[in-house]
Length: 461
Ligand SMILES: Cc1cc2nc3c(=O)[nH]c(=O)nc-3n(C[C@H](O)[C@H](O)[C@H](O)COP(=O)(O)OP(=O)(O)OC[C@H]3O[C@@H](n4cnc5c(N)ncnc54)[C@H](O)[C@@H]3O)c2cc1C
Image (tube, rainbow, N blue to C red):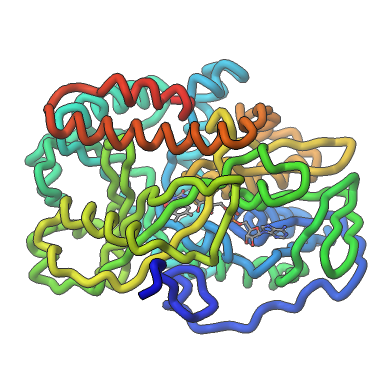
């Protein structure tokens, strides 16, 4: 029996496998000259193309992707369009000030609504429901941390967060042993593959040239080199996120972190009667190695977590293949939360990579002399951040003087990751410490373990 869960079709996630198969767009036919060349057809690249083409219809814009639009994390993720900001707010504030960091939170809140608005206006059906996000606490340390997090979040400008006791939580959703939770309205459930596919179609209809199966081999001053020709461009947007480490000269810039998901068979009404979850809230927990989940539009549970977090030497992707051991551990997590699902079937499993900068903070950085803008490093919170990045890139390209350009992540510089084997040891050590801390805290019923506090230093928390 193979040791990896690997569907035999050329698709990378359950979401994609639900959609009709489609023909790839033609690769770049040869050398080209455009105003803006966008490398990567995920949410970052496509939102940038969408806002640029909408604001400046005369601009010649091209998107090139090594595989196809939605091949990366954008077509594989957990479908949380949340207002979460990657990294520590203190890090952004140290560079850009407290007010700018609070403003970033407000922009993230508004960006959730902006995604919903555009999907609505452009008639992109992506099963979107704005039901907010629930974070559950299942043992004492989680509950303590959750209360601290809610207080801290409010102090940093996060609005409308509610702390729920066990009774209030159970009126929304019944997770085994839950002591309580928090709820924020600023989160929408999406089907990521439907959104990214719909966005790519819309961008193309706005006149953007989209070429798939066109790997970029190098990016230089106003020049993009691909396997199919050279593209000269006034502006270049590098939007390859977790794949950035694969590009020449960027191996230590962003760490490609793995995340894996499973999805159950459809659950019958009698199971939902026991669980609740009528509001389509996104669901996570306050563990150090946390899970993330959604109730899908067709009544399954899709649940994700870290699996094997990092492959030696920043190796990035195996077309979504997922080790059986990871599928088993995600299933165990699901049944631990919902014991009634002990016999449920796993219908599908997949994995993907996301980008982690050394300080765990996202950035949008423009080099005016080379014309290159790089955006990403969202650390697993990129669905909404990519929308904000897209509008920020629009303003950078058009030279507009807007509030978005004053956000603390614009121009945010980060040092490189350590060389191997330090990088591998650091990340695996951090996750081993977090797992041990979760186990100890649950067993003992005590507060946050010192091990977790040490791991937080690697994680920049
Ligand atoms: C399993 C999983 C679950 C996640 N869940 C969530 C979630 O619920 N909520 C959330 O906010 N975030 C989540 N994330 C993170 C989120 O999906 C990403 O942050 C976001 O999609 C990044 O979008 P992007 O466009 O920057 O990158 P990607 O979507 O990764 O797109 C990059 C594109 O670049 C292309 N590319 C790469 N190299 C080259 C090259 N050399 N030449 C040309 N093209 C190239 C790729 O083919 C790809 O299409 C998750 C990630 C994973 C993997």
